[in-house]
Image 1 (spheres, rainbow, N blue to C red):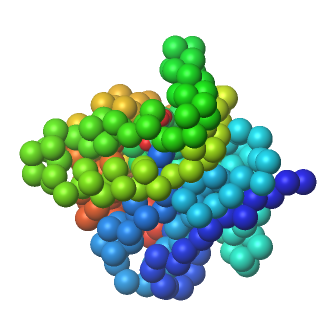
Image 2 (cartoon, rainbow, N blue to C red; image 1 turned 120 degrees about the vertical axis):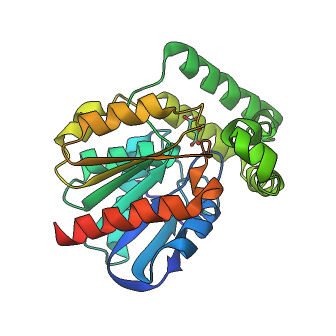
Image 3 (tube, rainbow, N blue to C red; image 1 turned 180 degrees about the vertical axis):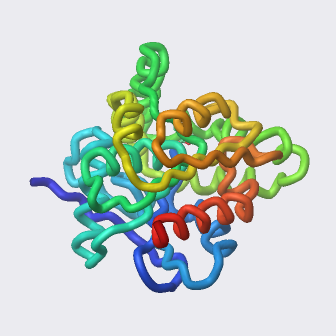
Amino acid sequence: MTRPHLATTVLRDGAGPPLVLLHGFPLDLRMWRPVAEALPAGIRVIGVDLPGQGHSDLDHLPPSLDAAADAVHATLRAQGEGNAVVVGLSMGGYVALALAERHGDFVHGLGLVDTKATADTPEARDNRRKIARDVEDTQTVDAVRGMPAKLLGPTSELERRALYPAVDHWIRSQSPTGVAWAQRAMAARPDRTAALADFDGPVAVVVGAEDDITPVDDARHMVEAARHGVLTVVPNAGHLTALEEPAAVAKALADLHHRAAHG
Ligand code: MLT
């Protein structure tokens, strides 16, 4: 079976089951550094570049988030991890839900940040496939260069201007092949509300109050579906809460890790 090489980085040393952080689109694990720095000492934190993103390759992986979840699981198992608290922002959250569905024994806690459990509408799917074709035709990521304005909320537009060039830099460093793969994989993902309802571990749902891409209603839908869900709405943050308000996200994730460790 094809298994791409996935880049992983220990963002913070510690003991016990790690907090595994999966990034959003079209970014990579660098977006998690501020959260990792804000987490309490003692929690081991591993960032993973999803297939085709950052420093991870694709190795002919089909465009599927199930395949991405299997690759993350295989990579962490090969590194000796028996289980983990898995956290994903947006696209990372779609993969985290796929991991919970496909490798439930491995996932001891689930963090869903600025994401949703539902599938795309037909219009959203068409739009993703159009972007994928554009990126492949031009062999540039120009089609997603405008995303910082959508990802960051109005408070960041006024008060955190430095985030714009940083996010733009990360987007420009992604490979067109990886960006097209991610768009096709996200377009193909199913509704995972039932998988979330089946998951028996602790769940943290975190959302920026100013998130227009996966708004607070999507977060409420997930926390209502989850058996053991806790909702945190982060004021003054958009879709990239992990960058806009890292301390608030770190607090919610530290609580999730504690719940996973202590039942
Ligand atoms: C992300 O931040 O990962 C994207 O907004 C996810 C998406 O396009 O659905």
